[in-house]
Length: 276
Image (tube, rainbow, N blue to C red):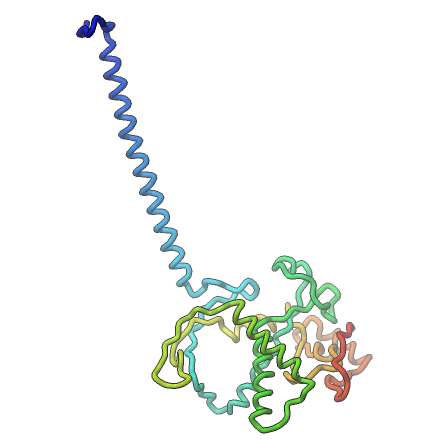
């Protein structure tokens, strides 16, 4: 029998039962605290691992691969304020920057896979549409702006009929810069117009983008003959199919029957799209 208190006589084994329950509660609390500490430690370790993985992923050259061409920022390019064009003059270099790969052809199913809406029909295949690659459009627009500057530099009057195109190009480059603002930091020398000079940046490979756009599976047989002239007969600029194009024979047969029309027709308004 246990001790009596205030006339109360505990039952036999009552204190032993209470002591056992208290012991079990303390053991349970102990393991609960261990479990909480373990879960918190695991969560912290996981978050640190995820943060480190994200940092390493962003540092990888193949981070932010293009959704279309699959190109990565894996090509180091040294920036130069005054580039050396080698054996070419500056004008020759710019003339050689061909914006023709700007147009590619794509099936409706492929376009939907990329979330693209309807586009102009490809003239040589009813199941394909034409889409334009931004990078080559930007080069085209830079050449238009540069040509306008060269006219001004030479003291000549810029053709008023070309001003809308020029303003379009200035604005589209502004839109592209503001759409994907580049936060890369550039060093500055104690001189004028040398910001970032000599720095090496990781870039997408331009030549690989050209190859991707001109692959026969998507080549639209398109050619930019002159960057700042309006095309009078649109079908003509889609007639430059290479021999390995699946549309080469179709195009040859079409023009053998119908003949070519001038791409540019002075005095004529820009031609509308003509389907073959």
